Length: 430
Ligand code: LRH
Ligand code: MN
Image (cartoon, rainbow, N blue to C red):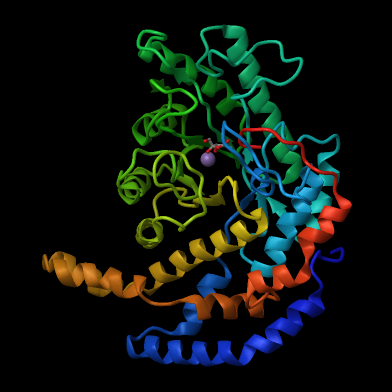
């Protein structure tokens, strides 16, 4: 492993300053959990093996259709994005994999990129295709769709791109392809709603046929945007039917921001799991639309309830239960590294809190229709401050007890502002 981006001495130094308080908090929480028959070290061990992937596109500032406000020292290519992702992993110790996006992360030598990442303590998670933007010199525009386009040559171009992403992913050590298409309409009548899906399924089947045996195809549904009247794969229903139609290697990916406000996402998780089609997550948070805000920043209770369903699923696994956990956010007003450190903490906290639920008490109360005690079984876990468990696991893994303090003291971003060329003004997600 090359020298990691943050000085190990700084991390050790700050951990030394925080260690006594952490051990005190950990011991106190341990006594409290022991009174409830929970072994804190067992929960810490579960937390230590938990991880979530970070999106390469989240390492830079994101934006909206109105504007994007770059920060000095933000990454300008995949190499600099990997360096920043290495900072998040070095300090937080829960994000050892990066989910890349093509062609945004295109390079000439993927074997070298894999080695470069490994030297930074990173691997690659699901690869993401992109048939929602046109690339310079592209033969067929995606203006009227991609996998569901009327034009057969356009559909084939989109199929070829997804197969190219699989070939790239094989060199990077990935085993998942995430397929999100923005295909849809803005006017009633613009496209036939039935035939659009048929075209999508026919094209997706060609991608499915190119999957290696140990790969999965993760279908990502989204209610709207960029299409604002209809979207071909708009909800979990369309997604699970498409995945069932395609075959066992096709699963459904739940991006938390892709639903109408107040949709019960944890129930969607339970349903997809019931039918063996829960493939993975894009964690973020939102108040209105696909806001791509930091995970747990707006509705941490919903994130906890999603992990509560995942804990139930883990206890009752269905065929191929191995959900891929990934962050998918747009950091429009924060330092992306700080947002992903904070988001990984929120996600891991919800995983830990779900592990604290007394499932025997919960199930007994459910069977007895004791609504209040069933609710309290969840609420007790949700109200438990698990931060000492995460910090202890992180410190023992070589990370920082206080990740944001260590990051700011490292002055990493201002150092990068000296080294990296400035990113131009613009708009849009990247
Ligand atoms: C679509 C989406 C998809 C990515 C893109 C960056 O909204 O969630 O997962 O390809 O964001
Ligand atoms: Mn997403």
